[in-house]
Length: 368
Image (cartoon, rainbow, N blue to C red; front, top):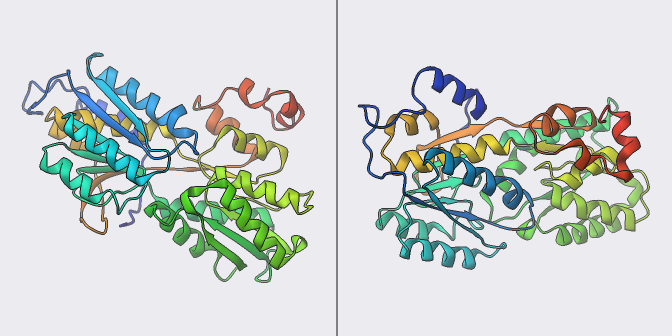
């Protein structure tokens, strides 16, 4: 993916575009050439249920935004593949057969879905790649700078190791699924920060981002390295971090080393408060999901100026070059950043985070 030098949050972009009179254009002027009205159907394909964000955040936010943009006339056909690439291909083919107007696709396997993306294109159905860059002739892409995510994880992990970090410090690296192109980019970004500063004592590419597999991998690494020699664990996401904590506890570790994560899941936020996980990467889901919904609606309604304003970045996939894209900024969340990120953005209420088991930990960081 081509890197860009500057990242702008979608919420900031929305304000600036609205100020220019670009967003909320009716399409009746020269700013748009509508091809569809408000009565459209948007297919939304999410990859798995392991990561709670898809059901809890991404889909509901998209649905609400599509309703807003279409005066509540737009329909959403939502499907989740449950980590099965073949199931997702079947779901997408059904949407093509049913002639939905546009598809938002978060792929299970970015390479395997390329043929079905081509079928959608041939049927005249635009495909917006969401969060993961699917191969094939997609029309646009919205996500985060994935190498930057890995860099942020690794830099924060090194901060967690303290000023005496040494090249002899042993780090276990638990990366995401080899079928997810994002996972490779997270890994690349993380290694750019870790190489030469610590020793990567064991590294794994974890099938389907499965936390049970991550637990098994770390159990194997601990047996080889020794529980007292694990300085830190790089985990590419929060679900796997949960499995990693289980493995360390089972090995008799009582004080957790720095463990990274991503997605700002509720249980990860609580682990951070409890000192079981050091950090997570919060990716502002409302910005990403709303941008995808806007892209989908503007694309099928022929609002080219609005669509172009949302896709001012460009990325390359293995099959296609210069894909119109939007890359959203990310934030590292440690104990002292919870209030200013996931709470401030309304992702979680303090009452959701600070249940009985976490009351004292919440009070210690001003969450009350």
